Image 1 (cartoon, rainbow, N blue to C red):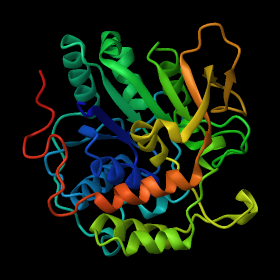
Image 2: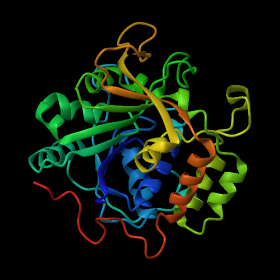
Image 3: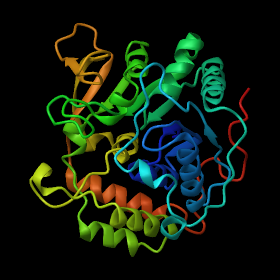
Image 4: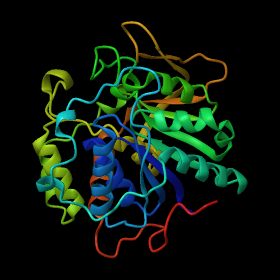
Length: 327
């Protein structure tokens, strides 16, 4: 079976780092490129962080590009740890990948158009604010034909928000972009906080990352130690989630998850801006909202693939060739 061709659109971020390492350690996935957007931190920092993580995975063939530096309409907000900016070199190293010159939105458009022409639609793994993808879809609506699905970490329906009481950060950071993506007609697989907070990584899992024998595992352990995610008052037990990695895990092992079809929308104005809501009885749902996860299976898969990322001899489907050359 041919590997699944994906673009990772992200705002690294510790969770994003885990997702990127996991994808680049998975031969079932052909990562065409990593596109960055302002979100957890500024655009310049997300670009630097993405380059460093791709470098840790020893995949200089995967282009890394900068996209939107601000939301479409709302005032800009950043993540909880925005003050850290780029990952400190003492935690993750300096990396060995330089950013590509092409704009992220143009890259998404170009690759999706090529995928439509060859009737081999690609998948977008969306783990940051949806600004880049919304711009691609709004400015060039025909690219929707080249996107098989968008697998997105975002939203919350029952769990409390983690940047406001009612909203998950990616939705809050650019709700207008989310509304464009949700209304585009492209099939959506959504991982809200309701499911991402059901799988928690504890100190023993962090220790396993550190002992994995690969640079990526050690770097992730450093980040998880420096920016502790454990919150027993919130989660009811020790440990913290790796939200974004669930999107990659679903691409690899969808059987680890359960979900429900729905129509999903987002609040665009007022005090509850960024709040997501779902109609699970919609007659023509375009989204699959994930609701359950096999926690041990998920954690084992994340650990396995991050340990594989960057190991000597590991090469992804496109390794050895320059990515992003479809015209």
